[in-house]
Each structure stands twice: as structure tokens, then as C-alpha cells.
Amino acid sequence: MRFRPLHDRVVIRRLKADETTAGGIIIPDTAKEKPQHGEVVAVGPGGRDEVGKVLPIDLKVGDSVLFGKWSGTEINIDGQELLILKESDILGVLGVSATALPGDPFIKKPRRAR
Image (cartoon, one colour):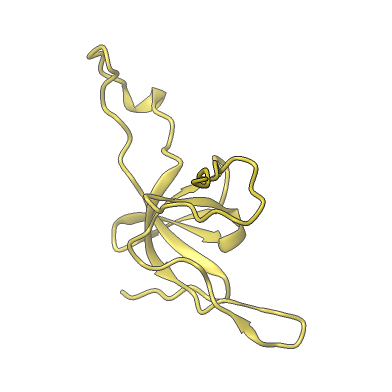
């Protein structure tokens, strides 16, 4: 079965939770928290602005993303547990270099040679 999300929605597959702690203790299924990161499986065409123009989504299939703990709707398609989120519920993309904006106080500027 194929699934295409509508508007600014994104389908995500959660990544597996750790089975053991760093000390080697096995975590039972009932004590595990669901991971807050996953892989984008499908992306909708984008939302619309006030004029009706489609605004494309900044994500693409295969991106690793972080999302809120209680975000989205869980669904089951072809035996896969997936999560449907709005683009605004996604907190960020993992593995992407951040681009500095002009005047960003957290980015160190290189010194000029005199």
C-alpha cells in the first residue's frame, strides 16, 4: 500500500530505541521511552499561504529529524509503525551543517589580517 501525506504533513519512521544502557543493563519494553528522532518516509506537497500559493516543505525523504515527545499521530501501514506530523512539529534535521545568519551572536567571526 502506498501513502502520500497531504498539505504540510510528513510521514516518519521512528528509529529503534536502545536495548541496553551504557553499563550493559537490558531495558525491558515496558520501561523504554519512544525515541524522538526518526527518518522521513514521505513528504506532502506543502502548505498554502493566504493567496493560495503552495509553500514547499524544507524536508526530503531520507532526512533524519528530531520531533517533540507527544507530536503527531501514530498509524500502522503494512505492519510498519509510522508517525504523521505537520512540518511545524519537527524541531530540526540531524546531520546538516547550520548556516550562519548575519549578526548571529553564536558564530565566531574570523579575524582580519592587519
